[in-house]
Length: 355
Ligand SMILES: Cc1cc2nc3c(=O)[nH]c(=O)nc-3n(C[C@H](O)[C@H](O)[C@H](O)COP(=O)(O)OP(=O)(O)OC[C@H]3O[C@@H](n4cnc5c(N)ncnc54)[C@H](O)[C@@H]3O)c2cc1C
Image (cartoon, rainbow, N blue to C red; front, side, top):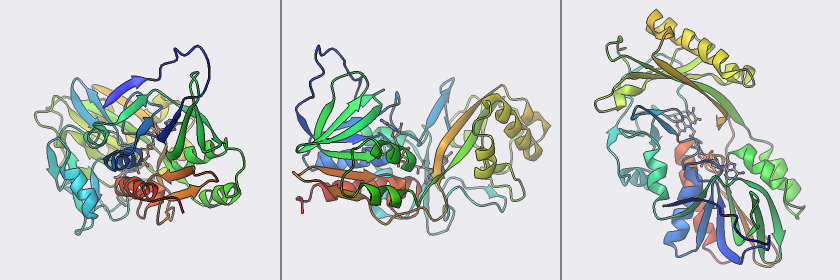
């Protein structure tokens, strides 16, 4: 993977020559799309606003110990997705979580069904997008602020540098982020219909807190607890049960969508404290006083109920330019599997000749 911030050394703001494909977003959908395009022989550049790849498939390290603060594990049944997970150069933890307690709903519908395969990685869930990113040209810390249709393609504005131009443009973002960027595109025949269609769906937020304790802190008898009665907690996970030789006992608490929405703009410390206090009701009073804790606000965490489309979208513009939309909403079921599938399927549609 080539990681470098977009250079701005050009004295002029003249647009670049046309690239074959630009993919905006280095989450699982964007990376699976870019990888499949590259394997099909296409020239592809990925633009990502963050300083690393993975998007919501996120892991943070504390004293070298990984903690997953997006998805705790991957789950699915699609053979291609399961094969992609098997190819990850990391230590798999199959069937995690093995010990599940509580009758509350899992993070994604169907995640714990017996026919569904589950997998986590000892190095953290970010091992998956890191693997997908191998060999791709990715410009990190490059936020796309506007897109424009031009003769034969698109112009993509990112940062202060000269606009980039491409024939095919892929938006592989959270639904709301795609809608926002599409709003910068001057009207095109399908624009109103597309915005109306995407407006039917929406993501839910999730406030999460990671917390570390001494190794002699009490260990629960579960890997993940889904409290049935709590209005606050969606789940509490014993993240350190995924780690080899952990330095800390670590927990991740994720809040329910409604509770998260009500506190989305409140200070992190405030709701982080409330989440820890709620977790302590299930773990014991000691859990309210961790060695360290970090709250994280996910504005667009998962898709809301019934938010799903069957396929990624490809819109053909006059003159041969194509706009593609991928992301977890563009394949049934949501989550990592849907994100991966949407990117792979969109790449398939883009390598077909224009209709
Ligand atoms: C707390 C939490 C728990 C979850 N639990 C599960 C679970 O148990 N199972 C499951 O399957 N899924 C789960 N998910 C959902 C799963 O993580 C997502 O569905 C999946 O990662 C979405 O991938 P994506 O590529 O579609 O989007 P993203 O991962 O959001 O990728 C979009 C990328 O685009 C970048 N970007 C955004 N705007 C711009 C811009 N203007 N310019 C450049 N780059 C931009 C972002 O930084 C990001 O990297 C969970 C998510 C969260 C947050």
